[in-house]
Image 1: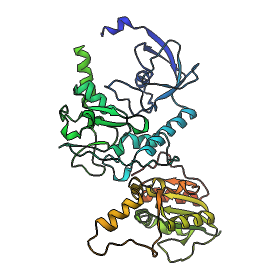
Image 2: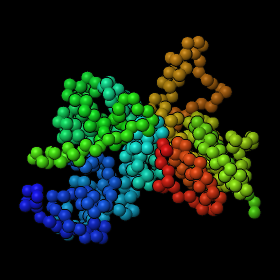
Image 3: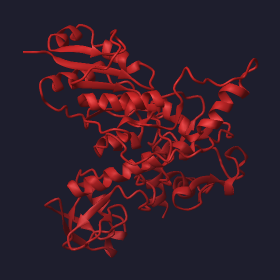
Image 4: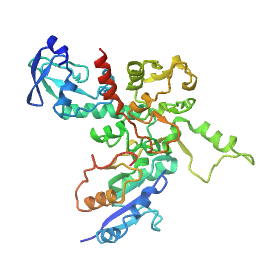
Length: 242
Length: 177
């Protein structure tokens, strides 16, 4: 058994009225996944570290006036968690609306149409229309890499690409530039991707990207399906090496 | 029992939603027993009538003509349906919002033209500065996403409305589908 068990306690908490046991080094998201409870999320992907960036996984914890992100909140004894109710649904819908309003997500002409985490989240969160005004920013596509394209119009700033490149590939080609609504993912301090000295062209960033922001050259509308089978394998290998 | 008055209008879109409506095929005959098409690009009426029960709107609000039409249609319609992604999100017509009208005209009517560069004026309605989805211009009662919504989705929406019920589409449609 993993050594971590000796250092962690087992606690009992309640999720959606059901009592469950969990280790104190687990997050609410991990425990919910074990229980077969799906909490909507965008930046969370099993196999990478969690950053609590998208806030879609916010849950209610009894006694806390604020909502807490399930992916970065550890469980504790006696905790009472609600993952789904009208208040959370409204918050999640607003977040998805803001994501759609912030960049130029045009599903009908997107390479990821029909295979997109954001598109699916709109359905899951019951977002039929965007009530906020669209910002329609003017953003340049970077097609300088010989195999891949970065289209910031589709980017939701989940930072999955940054984390997979850093934590799994070890190249740290991707990073974030700017603040707030002006944030962008960049390669090598803002160089065109094709001129990057650090990129190994492994393509992991493309595969973990939830939308059509990163895609393979040569695919047309709705043709880009992401292949993420490698993540659990690499995660296990990393844990064994520790 | 008198038939329900149904209309369809075509704003800034590709007519794909109307094609999808025609894809109802023989179901159109069944619907025609309960409804009358009082205005549409598919039939030859010049004036949008008063007291329409249901209007299906294809396309986004992109120019002054669209704006004039949708205000009139809203005033004369009981249940307004945003049909398809252009009406619901702005979709492809809305992609010009990131460019702006002036650079767009320069690109289309000056830079790409070799003979007699000139801009359209007078005969066609002026473009609005921003392409907007219908619900950001007038209140909309039913949202039907899809590019285009399938014939079955349109059939479901229209038959529910004709039966006096509001269609529940939350998990049945999505953008781009």
